Image 1 (spheres, rainbow over the protein chains, first blue to last red):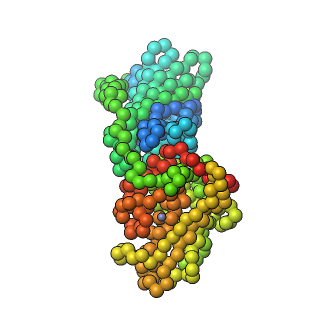
Image 2: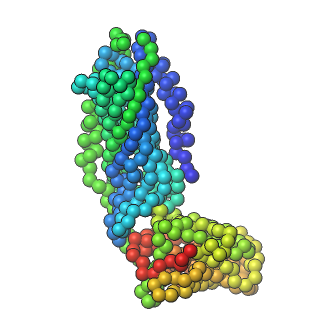
Image 3: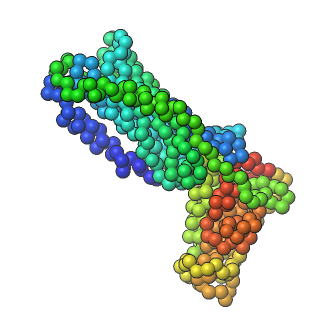
Length: 208
Length: 219
Ligand SMILES: [Zn+2]
């Protein structure tokens, strides 16, 4: 098993570093806002191939978790550092059937800006890195390593006044997918991958 | 509560439009080009029968006779073949109980003299055979592979030969029932290379995206 994450972004340390960084950049009188959420994520295909029959390879919809910490920059804008994780199954569809290839974690560390939108909603933009971390790599598109892929996205958070910090968050992000194995195999260009994530999240404010 | 402090608000406010621009720019691109991977040699047997392991039989179970370096040759061969796939179509594993095996791998004759593998030119110091019993539209019982070595040949030549012939025979157990006419391919009748070529890879990938006519042995 290969853990890309260990090289790129150690999670407990990553969250600690995120909070520490925000505390450092946080203005003296600003609030620190934490959002923790859980939900589902779905993604468009990662690979379209055709050997004898058309083959689509992608990650099935799966559980998603998200952690974001932010600091208010002014009356409207909040700077956010986030980390989301989804746990999915890499699946091959084609030849009249669907087969599971391996379990896969998808990590998305990001930095973004959130601001009020219409009524009880807020909108945010984010950029970051998509990291695919499969359980098995041999005989998969990740056999020669998992790349760190640039990603960008938008999110819409709906916070009704009566829910005491609970909100619904709908996010969309996209990235260009490719791996060394696919390039070696002769694939030209990248696959554009869209992901949608729906979260129920809890917001906690800290500071004055 | 809101604060008066605002370090770089103007620059940061541009983040949302930048994200959108990235998104629309990327979304305009078309799907990547798919490589052409036609089979380059016949994978069906002499009767036109096609065999491959269905996905739900992975990992295919191999029992290996514990003699000489045969277990290490088989382990290396399973790894070599597993690496030819992109979408987890096939994998193999070694099991301890021969009665649970899908494939039995044996060493014919005595135990060969020990020798490390070298890059010496290939010498025909061994051969192999793979057999399965077809009953109706299915293989019955475990597939059996046996590799034999030539008494009198140099130990190094025997080791090198057993390594590549084992990989070749394991290729047969995957369902590559024919042979390649190209000596650069592992599935050439008398293999001179140790690992699958691009043609071997194309052929086995094509096989594993083809509907088989033979079912695997029951478990
Ligand atoms: Zn042969």
